[in-house]
Length: 188
Image 1 (tube, helix red, strand yellow):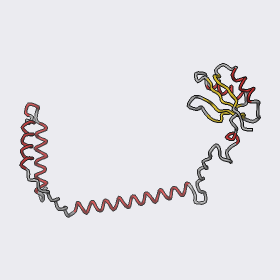
Image 2 (cartoon, rainbow, N blue to C red; image 1 turned 90 degrees about the horizontal axis):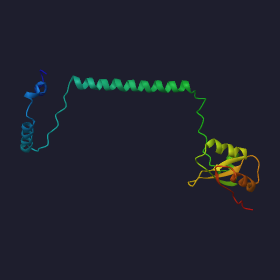
Image 3 (cartoon, one colour; image 1 turned 45 degrees about the horizontal axis):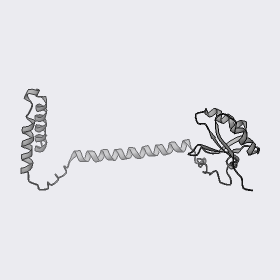
Image 4 (cartoon, one colour; image 1 turned 90 degrees about the vertical axis):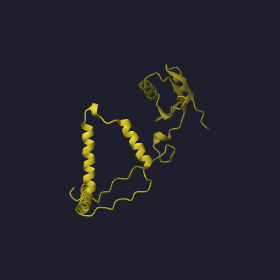
């Protein structure tokens, strides 16, 4: 403060502002008058670009550079510790297992349940419990191949053994909650 006139002027402005903020409400400054003065000053202001003040030299800048250097060294040390810790947890001989390959249902190597042929189309009353639907399918050896579609149609196939699709569809139609059951015509 002793060496910087700008700093002393700024401190004086801050103290003046603090004193104004501490005044009781009846002694508050006239806001409208202040805005008018500000508008006049802005209108009269010279519109020349202001040159940036020259950077101050001395202890504060050097101190900031030292702090930045210390922070960088600490960051590098932390990174080294993290890498060393990762090597302890996962030795180099063990590499992480690769992600399993994504397989589509139509792929040749797809699981057996994915290669089940669609044999029936079924529409089940959606207000019925899901467990009832699952029990119905299990009891007849059916598995879900696809669905439901946008219209609520399920595509079903036979799990382990083939059954007569016509007979199963006829039996399903008699079950409460089954709204539609038809065999799918298979190519010959």
